[in-house]
Image (cartoon, rainbow, N blue to C red):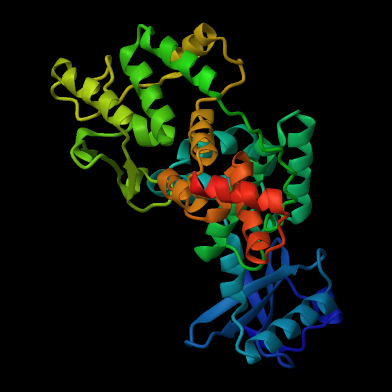
Length: 405
């Protein structure tokens, strides 16, 4: 090791390495920590420093030929200034190297988390595998830009996916990067923080009383009694599909008329109680009478094929019942929930009560059913005019008659 001013001239006149020596280092006498290391293969520049804890680090600046002596010196000066201001260049470099690719993060960290915490974990896994990871997976987390997310959105639209499906993909990408930021693997802003959600056309489809009666007749005649009973319970409670199909007898209180949804199965993550009407109670009592067929199965709607498991699905019974009842092919099982809420609104049930029955955490979610009770809203709007004595005499008299009735 020698100390000299590292210059272009010195590098050009370096003598051969002594016999048996693997390397020779020259320490710059003008810039502390600037090093030129000579080997048989050439010269490489380094910068050496001690961090705040006194630990020594070296950062490779480049090989002579790839960088010039002046470039290496300027880089060493920049690093020296960074250290003087309390920085740790080696730690920052190691931190950057530790940032995983999107695919590594998704498979090793995010998906295990989703399987433990999210009810939609299966959907997350499918969306990632089919479209998100093929588009973004090879990029390191901090390489993904808003432009990359916009390009993913463009591809999803070009594929012909519905706006709602495109938005679900974008929401999953946003959630993935939010998790990376929250866990300290990514610094700065979420590249999918404003992904450009597409407008969604909420599809309102509600069963009329006649259609509902036809559906129940079809379900009564369906050969799969368990699936048919589950669909009936969905129709008369407005429960979500998972809340009903995953229900256990320990969750049912027929005396009080309540079906309890534990936090693990509740969309809000909180305990929810579904009120049971006389019809809903009758459906559950019919299931209870058949429990001896599956005495070891704790589920209200047990599987006929897998011991101890809930019914696998109800889509077959749903398709058969729709066809038998003459209902539209595009009617979804979830539309039973909407139909239930619509029937309540049409009957004058206040929206806040509808929201409580459906388990909505925000009144804004329930407001979509407000237009199903127009006459009730008109009557409410008329109250102010009546209070001001602004109603014409015939209308005021008619309003009084309605009030008396």
